[in-house]
Amino acid sequence: MITKDFQLKPNTARIQNDIETLAKLVDLTKPGWTRRPFTRWYEESREWLKNEMTKYGLEVSIDSASNLIGRIPGKEEGLAPIMIGSHTDTVMGGGRFDGIIGVVAGLEIARRIKEENIQLRHPLEIVDFTAEEPSEFGISTIGSRGMVNNLTDDMLQRKDPSGLILKEGIRQMGGHPERIRQQARNEGDVALYLELHIEQGPVLEQNNKKLGVVTGIVGIQRYRVIVEGRPNHAGTTPMNMRLDALPGASELILALENICNETYSEQVVGTVGKLNVEPNGSNVIPGRVVFDLEIRSLETELMEQIMNRLIERGQSIESLRGLSISFDCLSKSEPIRVNSRVIDTVKKGCEQTAETITLPSGAGHDANQLAKIAPIGMIFVPSKDGRSHCPEEWTSYEDVALGVEALARSLILFDN
Ligand code: GLV
Ligand code: MN
Ligand code: MN
Image (cartoon, protein in one colour):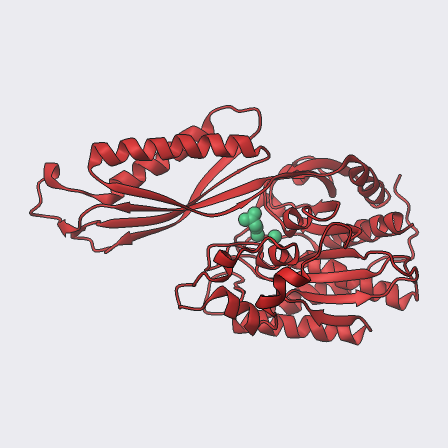
């Protein structure tokens, strides 16, 4: 039942101001709202956040994986913290809300707690996780992986196209990569992880509901595929004497679409969103194509089956076309199902705030990583026209504020 009175009601104007302030700290030479991790704009937004946390009396620190953390102590000695977090990095050409509202939600709840002079039983930690989106290192959720000891040495040694080693990027952001393993949090170190996020899909809007309680989050498997052929003159090389890498890559990409379009026990989606053709000349037969593919589902088994079928398909394309095709796994994240007791409590917090439904998440989140060590709960607010990862991404500030209120109510229910 919706109840109007709530001591921690968020300040909508302040939330709007936070989102608009962060929307200015972006790379203006890039489309939409672009704030890639390990850039000047990312550091500036971190600086702003840090100042805002300090202004309201939070204890601010940066952990070894370079996550920014603001903490309010709890009144009961020895209780593990409740954590609220998300990310402030964006995809290239992204929007103003993905990840950002989750961090702003944490900040606003902390500010309201301070203003109302409330003391929770649990310590509260507000986290801006480093680099949640796929980075130039081919890895996503870097900070949350680090926090739960799921960032391997191999990942830390990866280089981005400019030659920066991930380890050094983390150091630049104030982290200590050599201490990540030792300082990682283990089961029991976090009492509960909560995240507010935009839905990034059309379900809430279509159902005319303001809040969604997340029941599960897809796992994501990402691969880099290299198709090697032979570059040659586009005019003088007869059709039957070519080793053209691009039609081979195209066949494989179409196979991914066809395989994912089949009917399974769970929905499966497959995407190739990044592709490089070499040498990329209009009169040169492509000698090499490199592309990144990802598969998502709530069932790990399904993703494995689909990948196996695709690799088999690659082998037949190789032999039919005389090409060489390799698949290099960039990362895998596990799907998660949210524990039903957490769903019930978050739902209660949401239902006190606005009309609510439950739904799974097709997007990955830092919550996938935190689920390795703690129970997690997530709340979605509507995305206009179901758009996200594009400049058109939009959620009204009133809807964001409803999400913040629902998150704060859930926090209080859990704390008690
Ligand atoms: C994160 O935004 C993802 O789902 O790729
Ligand atoms: Mn995203
Ligand atoms: Mn996100």
